[in-house]
View 1: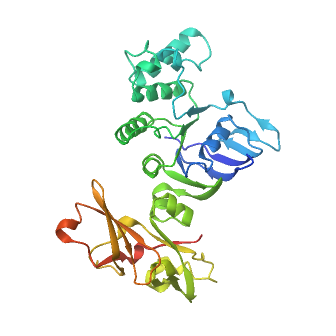
View 2: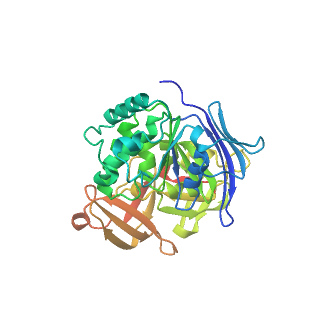
Length: 364
């Protein structure tokens, strides 16, 4: 499979009460954009598609320059070869399946019929050609919408939170279907979502947006494993984030947790944070709620007392909120699978342990 098209996006858009100021480049085929509601995810897609026009900037995919404010270039959406899958799929309600698929095609009728027939077969829509969207299930509507997009062979497909309105069971099922349908698609797919699981499953590179700006970019699994700043940590699911205060050369206090650690304890991971050695400066630390252990491991560990615990029971796990010290003003969260720890049988532990390598250091 040939290498993906290189993409360069530099856009600014001022909406008065919100400002999008985003710059990134990528040559990955599957890109996820993760962020809270209102951070500019959908606006970014609309600028790429040509639905919205940036105030300033440049959008180039491969050799195609779609937008350049300095050169006064702004291609119309129809010529950008970008397919946009909206949240509600935006099918024409009075048109049949085959009419919807062929709606964006131009050329001679026999060629259009052949392309529609090919899409019907590819997306397993045989027998549904004459049905209206209202007569289809959600999964069938999604397949029709995607077939309509791929019928005109776009270079980029934009997925705008396509699963946000679905229940958990249907969302998981349709994610799997969509991943299978796009498995052999050679172009770029950009998925925007506020759902961590979706972007983790469907993207190889991740962009994190916060308040209209890029807060992180990198390989998806790497960015989840070790976010570099507080925005990335929060959006990738860290429940425990607290500010750090430098106490001395390589020693830090986390007042909220009544906890002190040294960079020397972290080995090579801590070495890059020594100020004055070209490293990053620590502003906060984070711990994922699932990474606490009830027993000390063979690896070096930190230890936290479990004080004033509050237990919430979910279907498959327990969620325990606790104070990690007698004078700690803040609380921490621990999540544990019922298969690992049975509170009725084992009770609550007096202490929790964290492998030192699992303490995340954040630079802002």
